[in-house]
Length: 102
Image (tube, rainbow, N blue to C red; front, side):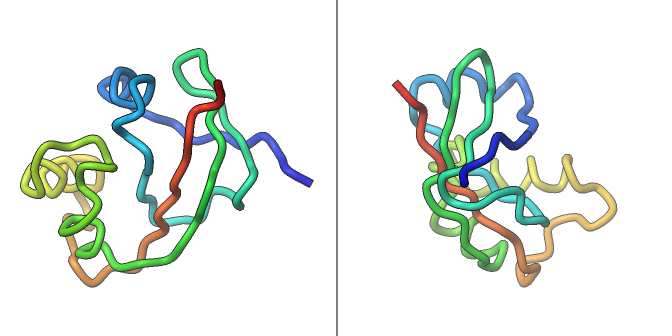
């Protein structure tokens, strides 16, 4: 059974998410399963795929899907959000892919 989950997003991601250019989020913890859904910025989003990976993989290949123009921008943002851990390329993280329900 699919469930409603909570995934917080900063306001800076509102436009990229609503326009569909931000289609994933990376977190240290798994926040849901495929089919689970969450609300953000007045819309509903559905998790399409949830997979473990390394942080460097996201930085190198998924930074645009994360809503950033460059790899450096993603790395800088990550360091800001996780100041204690910083950007550790070999850290195991969870990539949550999602789409906006129509």
